[in-house]
Length: 636
Ligand code: FEO
Ligand code: CA
Ligand code: CA
Ligand code: CA
Image (cartoon, rainbow, N blue to C red; front, side, top):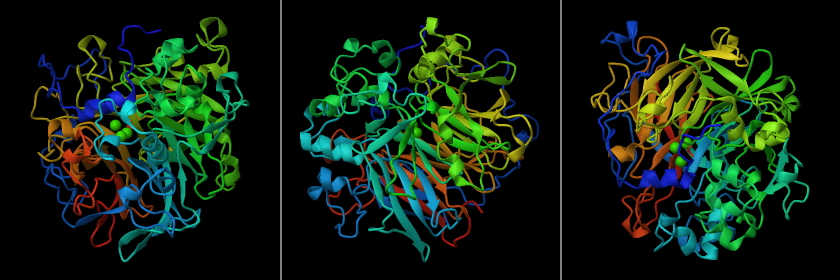
């Protein structure tokens, strides 16, 4: 068990770090730059990549980086808001008016702080790129810029019952039909497929923890039905046309004295501190760990949604483990096994992989229905010799036995982080997205940053002390490229893809392709997607701390321009860019612009009223569609 690392902060602390400039230093105070860890060092920019005259395969003229109140996109492209917080989802609803918004209205309107985006074509099973369901996570609320006179400090105690109820309806997930006509994406208000999932919706529990005593509450004596989903951050889609939404840690939703909980040690390991940051425990006992001790066990899972059936009950799939889930990227292995890659987004947390027991048959989508309920969850151990191992979190194996504190497989999953500690997994610099390149079969894991990592805590794959800028790791399954890659293998090799930061600032210790421009380097990678040609698109979260906009960068992963980023899009003041998602034809790249203006202390001090700007309008998170003005593929 590890004891040397700092306690894990709740996610709101991570958010607070982003919005607070206080005490932030560019690079470390001690001036430490990149330190090559002992042992294996990735083959960053050796050999052919050092040739200076290479250019990216991405055909756009790079955007000039400007940090202001607007979004910007490269010449020859347009970026238009498709749907924003509070937009109507029903035909009878009027346009957004914050003065008329209450919890009941919010329950039927687009949610706040959009994050992961999935475009699910209509009809189901087609690759239609002009009509589909936009399935969007609504991660959390920035209440300080939603309501008048509400400061972030002490927000939970100050919010009214009505404000808390509205916020509970603004989080979760939004499904809305969209259509492209004449090159413009429009929502279809009133579509029978439109749906909101909130902190009040019903979710089934499946997998090893379903029905377990630790999942039972006064609301649900069977341990099989949860009210609500929360902190829906990253996600994924499945070959059977469902959406996976990741609960990224509900720790700050809960109030009460954690020390009085029978699970105090586990809650502490998951960052729970009873802060009740959004005031929820003041109005609902289920969020008080003293009154409803098991409720916290029912969050921090991956949830599966069937967007094509608006009457279906989404399912929390406990076999995928309990953590601050960022990503759930699904790969169909060549033997039909379903593989899910997941990051646990917190300081010194781990990378995970799930492999299904059964094989999926693409000719029969029904074979996917409950396939995520049985399989082996593993955690990554990264070795200095350039290999990495997936260590199975299986009850009865190694230290995961009853006498070591793990009573059953359900117990292992409820305490996933502790089980991974026991196996000696490799602590990472806050693992966010993990995605696969569909062309090469290689897997990319994003470490967004880790200011807490000191020189004595470095390891072969996290090589910079006080890593404020993040990096991207390449995981290489054996077996060959593309569909030949074996995503079920116990051992992979790995490499460092890029070390983010300013290449001209020695304190950052950044490593990109040497031809990277002044506008092309980035900090704090968070989410990734790939275009149909296998080029990577990186979304960043954290650049504002460097007086830079967050944005979208296209990067080659193969060839002489490997690791050479180019800036395509930037978000407005205070916003991260997240949830990048292509239409099947690659002509539209959807991006969530999350928490614009969130860094303002109060609503009257916001630095942007994006995207409406009209009069005194309120800033609104929104999903943007990036397209070439000539309609060709993005990056063509
Ligand atoms: Fe919600 Fe890990 O970002
Ligand atoms: Ca976020
Ligand atoms: Ca994220
Ligand atoms: Ca993030």
